Length: 336
Image 1 (cartoon, rainbow, N blue to C red):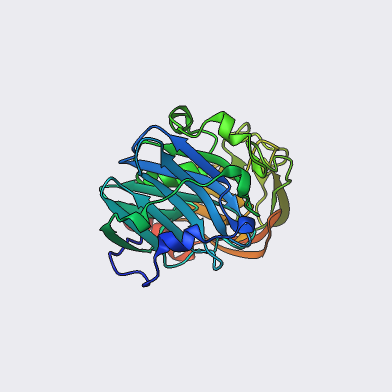
Image 2: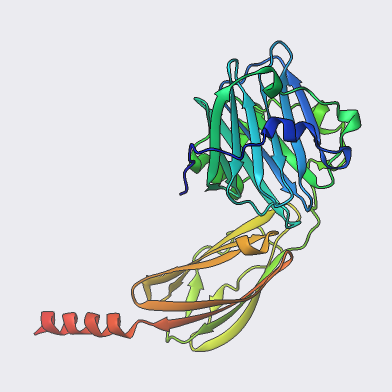
């Protein structure tokens, strides 16, 4: 996990740079509030090509608040005004201008900013300087500002989420009641601006094709036939010494990705088992296929295609001959 560094940013004033953004490429949301946010976590799902100023929070009673920007390279820049200080942050890498959906998360406490993309912390530069008049963030008008990308499921809470909590939110965005219940970002703000959706692209079809080569003598049976509510999923049986192709297809409720789990065991010896753990994402490089197997088995996995809509992977399951020989030798010694 990468950590932030307190090193100098460029000599340009980041606050002044943000204020000079053009109307075609600036803030989608300006939220005025009554709270001074000494601790917060801001998150949003973003799909973007050109960058821009995407969010601003301003306290109505003082000059505190924060602003979030994506630059032309897809890197993240953020400024927080506390009562006395300006905390400025820029990410060392980004990639948020690839026109795929990403979860952008920014957390703040004790004058320190942390930044995450898709649940992974990224390295940032940060500087803390006294708050002067030219560094005070000014509230911008929603009417004059627009953002060419898309943004959804915006949340702003007065809690500092841990690395685990942010990753969990990325993996399971629909099961985060505590974030929903404490969200400062209100419904009236969500629906007043274009390009902000509560359930975007729910009709997007995503599927995974697995070509499984079972080069073992084991016939595997699915452990729980009712696991996962999908339109299509893995077969109840993976035959021994066989090659089969399977399709896993999400239903319309899975956005922006789906997670699929399936557990199998060898009918004659339930201790010989394999577990599938699949993440299919609208962001191709985030999709993955992982197998967990008992010692009797090994596997190779090759992903031949990964797009927004489809993931194709070839999996070869083999017997671990070294382990089998050692197991037989140990049994022979015990019998002897």
